[in-house]
Amino acid sequence: MKHLISCDQIKKEDLLSLLTLTDKIKNNPVFYTETLKNKVIATLFYEPSTRTRLSFSAAAVRLGASLINTENANENSSATKGETLEDTIRIVQGYADAIILRHPDDEAAQRAVQVATIPIINAGSGGKEHPSQGLLDLYTINTYKKRLDNLKIAIIGDLKYGRTIHSLLKLLTLFDGIEIHALSVKELELPPLFENLLKKRNAKYTKHTTLNTLPKDVDIIYQTRIQKERLQNEGIQASAASFIIDKKQFDTFSADTYLMHPLPRIEEMNSDIDNDPRAIFFSQAHNGMYVRMAVLYQCLCENK
Ligand code: CP
Image (cartoon, rainbow, N blue to C red; front, side, top):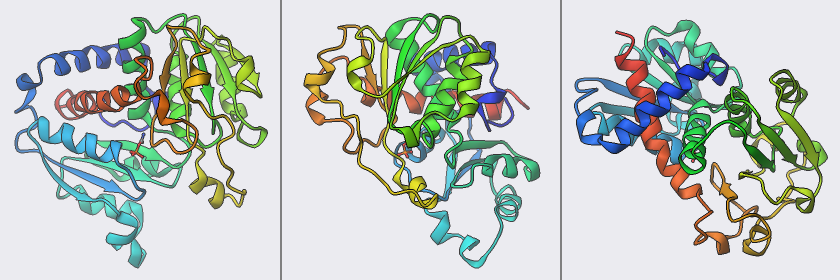
């Protein structure tokens, strides 16, 4: 892997190799502490982030790299003076060995890679993609379910602008026997592009309008937040979460149903479920650091 731009670029064998590398790193992190010695990683975040920025930063430091960053590039970089993303990339690549980029433009990572001479890692581009989140989600599912084929997954919330959903579906459908149960309000349904992808890759797809009709034996419930910032940008009235999962609701599902969420959670998930061993969203977020160590390793060490 030279860059990580989109899950479209990831083949099944590459994904499995990244999951294996993640396991190796997680089981023996000390072995990797000098992997990126003398490398400098730049984080360029034009949108807020807790998990992605800090876990990529921790991943880089744990591999021995140094960091330079603009955590609020929209306000603290020369973007405020009108500098283009392309020029910023041209400049920062003179200072760093890789750039981790989060940006509100759907095509930002693609634009960056057109001018880049160093690896670009997409840390979230608009409502379109969040590939490293997709990778850590697959890693987490495989860790808990011990398989990636024959999975029944409920996706809930903002399926239109939820970039984590889009990346997750692109990766999940590399596997056989995938069944997707989609629950959202009408305005936030899965875009036709993804419905077509599910069809093309022979995944079973069912739409729901209420939590009550979801199969009680789904392997994973993947809850998401309403992306209010993107609704406002599109001039759509932001709405509160319509499908709230609490302990009572979660207890109607199987003992083997795990609950995931890319986080942050807002009103769509009640904290009374946090101590349920099937609620794995904090573990999911922690896995992100190891998966991102594997991504940095592959982008910087396997393409010399
Ligand atoms: N899941 C995720 O992307 O979280 P952050 O926005 O905090 O990075």
